[in-house]
Amino acid sequence: MAKYRPIQIRIWKDPDFEKYNSSMKLIFLYLCTNELTTESGIYAISTRTISQETKIPEKTVTKLLSNGLKNVIYDFSNNCVFIKNFLKYNGGGNPKLIEKSISNNYEEFRTPLWNEFIKLYPKFANGLQTVNKPFISISNRISNRNSIKEGDYKGGKKRHFAEHVTLSLKEYRKLKKEYGKDNTKRFIKKLDNSKGAKGYKYKSDYRAILNWVVDSILGNKKKGDWKDKF
Image 1 (cartoon, rainbow, N blue to C red):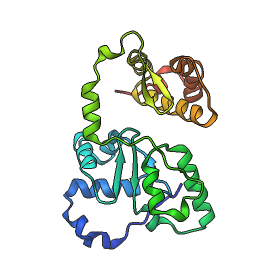
Image 2: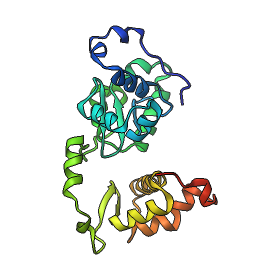
Image 3: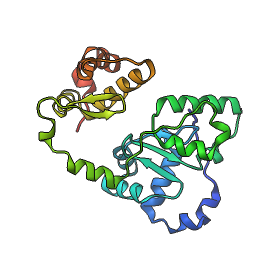
């Protein structure tokens, strides 16, 4: 992982950047320079993390990302971001190493944002395939959230919490109560990647998480050492 990320000094004279308010400028600069950035410009980061590190209210972060910052696309369904010009300004170095890094990013972050990447950087798209599952805009996410009622999941009816992971709302709440929201997201991501890469199938994803994913993520840590606040 790079220890620094360059920012072009002419950004301060960019007509679009000049129109940004202070919150928009800070979010854009943060998204280009934080420790989670990758060579492809696609990486996972939650609106909560952006809010905590920039001290901008999460509601404001969500609103700004949904309305769109130039050259920034946010996939709310997968909590992933794509900085469209990132590779253009950070692509120096050995091309083979860059391609390998991008390939690793592709395997780690399963998001339709890769469709945009393939269009913009065809020379780095060898081996990459389009991701058909559409990413959800904030307006659709709110609409879907409002249309889902807790009663819809009585009787163990499942819903997708990731591409390959289904849980009932009751199961999800049990995990969140026992292990915290952030760890539950980590469990789901771990299981989703394993099922997607190796074709695993389980009668119950909830039981699979309890059976091996929790130990894989948390190991032998005591509850007080890992439970996050939520």
